[in-house]
View 1 (spheres, rainbow, N blue to C red):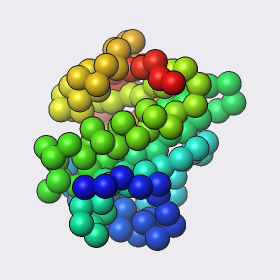
View 2 (cartoon, one colour; view 1 turned 90 degrees about the vertical axis):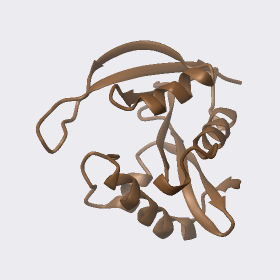
View 3 (cartoon, rainbow, N blue to C red; view 1 turned 135 degrees about the vertical axis):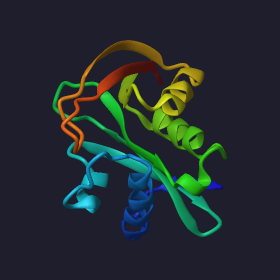
Length: 151
């Protein structure tokens, strides 16, 4: 496996990976414009995991608004490649590239594999609260908020 900075040519294969990830529950609602969703406002950089010549994962770092802390965003791994250290390697790339001294992220309470990864990598739980979005069922998930000192 190797990690590289995301290129424009990675976006279409990433949409295909995202579709498979969506089948496992993330994101809870399929975006109208998945290429745009992969590149949220304030994106500073993004990285792609490759297994041989196949795109298998993604992560980004964004600053969602001026004066806000950088955040890890759009971390996803093809379900067929989970458990192989892909998310760990992507998260390390994002942490290394994050500007400033701290970075944050949020994750749903119902994804313990994800938040256990963050805790194993030294992320600190800073709180819990309701999401500002809802699932297709109308349920508002509980988010876990994490921060980590970087740099």
